[in-house]
Image (tube, rainbow, N blue to C red; front, side, top):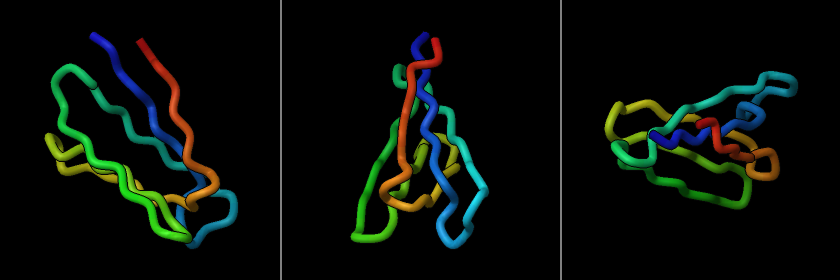
Length: 62
């Protein structure tokens, strides 16, 4: 099972980092960008994060 961790600085905050875990084999995700923000939504669970666009990063967890 492969999972990705998306993270970034919460939009409208300065030092608050938020994360979202996604199972890429079972979850349906959507990533959108505007000039200021990036949104990552796990459509399978309804969870999402909105972060400053330049701060979005991801890593393979397992």
